[in-house]
Image 1: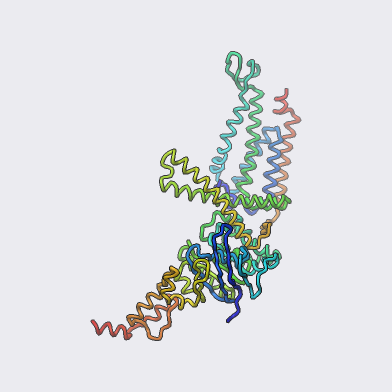
Image 2: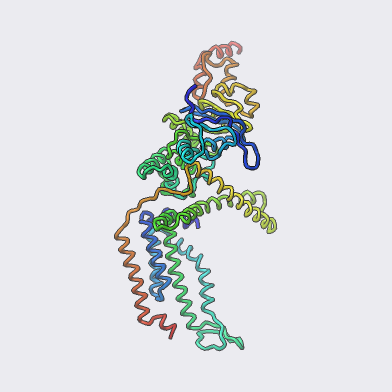
Length: 290
Length: 266
């Protein structure tokens, strides 16, 4: 088993009003991987993420970071928060300052970095999220997409080992979605561990290395995307759709219209590559029938 | 209000050191509050209007903004000018109501004109500051002036969340009116009540969520952020000093010369 960077072990969490949010949830996130967490609204994804950042403390079980158990003293919490960043779903709940630069500088300053380092991190984060043109504008005159990118820059400037994105593509237009997923890939190439929660099975299927499915406050299934989405019963139990690529691929396969040795495609391009250019056995067969 | 804010971030004086702008506005305003000289007060109002035009704010917009306090001013000044007395002595114009006499006394008229000019001058200073200096910069100057952090942080958060709150109110209002929530006076009142109650609840929820999101970025009780650095311009400081000294001299000259104030007390 590869090295796990962050781990939830039998985590229990009950809200003050008694609602059980997480029940004996165990999840081990491998270092440097692209992880997707799927689950319906209210399944406990955000609650789990808040545990990974020590904002919430489990009522039972524990969280491990880099193999060490979190003991919730001040130093330990500070260290965890500099190593695990969360980009929240609604940028308006994250942006507290009217100035874009001040907003992004908040995290690195809290980490106690010197001014020059803070400055260079802020400007790098702004370039990476294409927000460098927004520096002089107040956050309340930004569009939703721009606010979203600033909220991502907030976390990038802290340069954490693990970055959690809570539904990063919700409410974004297709172009911005592509930009954000591109950013996730870029982070992953830099060796960061990227965790993303989403409802978008197509995104999870083509992007993730490994998928966790959360249902009713616990992990109901995990595995490689091609395995998770093959199990129809499992998908129905967890009210998940099948990614369209798998649907189309299976359909083509059953009609003999794909190359025999083609592995299950992960993207539109891979799927198209599976369809033979001209005379395939399938097409020859079709001709014969005609 | 949003229009003012928009200009604050996009005017030509944006790159001027906010400390200079704040000093200019505050010192001139203090002069306006103390000075008894009509000339100095009007000069201050005109100077500030000039500075605002210089910052690239259209005159039309500025005049429109001025109409907001103007309505208050007219009422207040009118109330000062009109007085009631037992006899009609010293009145420029008045109505005899038998036992009373209502009218405008010359003394009161002078006082109300002074009040009008004083308010105009002071308001111009405030408008100059709010049209040319973003709130964020004002706050950072206050921080440098060692105003307590609690006060500064509250100012920053309130400023930021005014906009979030207004946006929330707007979206609730839209969703209510799209379901006929404001079709008549009765439903209008009830919808407005629901809106207000919801806004309070949402504001509370927001503050909780904000605490969570700040904590996750290492907030431990104090909001510290990067301050923008501005170049201090000696030329600007000299100009500000020259203008304000001139205004003070103007006020003093009129005081010793027994100007308006002399006329009032004699």
